[in-house]
Amino acid sequence: MKKRVFFLSTVILSIALLAGMGILLATDQPDEISIKSEAFAKYKKGPVPFTHKKHNVDYKIACTECHHVYKEGVNVYKEGDPVQKCSTCHDPVESKDKVKKLMVAYHRNCQGCHKALEKAGKKTGPTRKCSQCHEKKE
Image 1 (tube, rainbow, N blue to C red):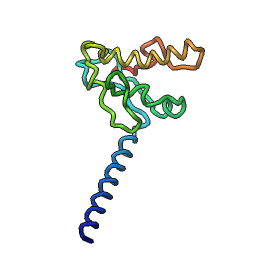
Image 2 (image 1 turned 90 degrees about the horizontal axis):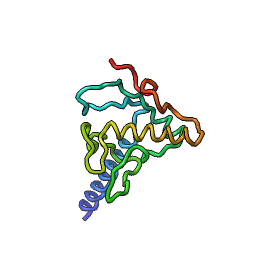
Image 3 (image 1 turned 135 degrees about the vertical axis):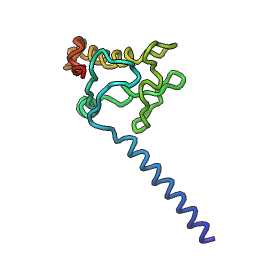
Image 4 (image 1 turned 30 degrees about the horizontal axis):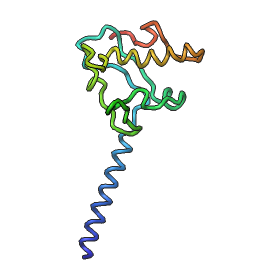
């Protein structure tokens, strides 16, 4: 009986520790990333540097503004969930059904947010010139 209780306690504790580690790893995003996708055959412009801290912490933008998993038309993504590559759903070549192609999705999300802030008379990042977001192509 004692062996069974010890064994079950060990299994439950191990599962809890592994789940906790998974949550910590999922929420540990890099502060700065470079938005680019290997899905594109070639780039016309350079990548776009993006700072998670500036957007999430400083500007209080929720993770769900960019990251999403739709089920029945509702974004069920929660902070800490694993992040899939955008190209998992957004095709780099063409829009399919209601899912915009990858470049359109990036531009609508980023420029859309910046233009809405601009329209509201608030401080914002670039909204028009490609070179204000995209680094020089290597």
